[in-house]
Image (cartoon, rainbow, N blue to C red; front, side, top):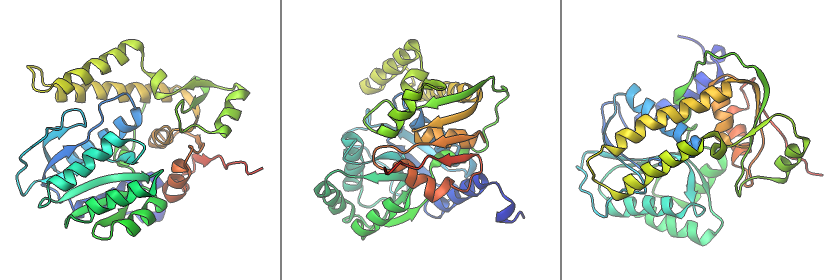
Length: 317
């Protein structure tokens, strides 16, 4: 057996995900809920890592639902575990996903409920307290969080829940092999939304590298295809197996991201999963923070030991 010191840090992080089998044992029957049906490649990487985890540990997924198609009432066998998708939408920035999470916990008081690794962020303390009231009524909730700040906040609020620290589920995809040799120097994979920072804008003004985000990675035809699938899933039970179609299409979307990243020698990114994808490919990358510290907290918790990765420290001047 290899010693931990001789392992690549990405092997260490992948191995840490094994702790989740303490609450979702190998061979379990589960429902996988809140799967992403949109064009954010970070969430798609998390989903692919989660599905790989289920396969690797012989965990049987009997049904998958997104926020678009989870029914008002659903009979789930008592001995099935309800597993909620991980990511960065725990809190009051993305209310649709939080409402679904709370609906499940309130609606299935006798099931084991496992929330895969999340970052927690609330703008309003009162909303956090409201969530805590719902969670603390349940006797078998297991919440995995991706950084120490989320761990501290969750431990303080959710006194009846089991809270654990864990890397992101995308680490189950390690290693991602790619055949293409890079022919360009720098990819700037930068946020274009409310989480971008002044530091990012300063780097953008320097004009180095090629600029991309999840929204511009996918073509108009691909975006239209995603929107069509969203509409079909919203409509519900039709003649086409839309969950299967979405699963295959997201394989293509993630593969496109891998191919694009493989064309560059270096990546500079303010997207957490731009950073994680670069690490999965063992590609040199520098990480900028987002607006509320998600990226730097994740880096300090998990990826600071990866030689190919660096954090750009915020200028305090």
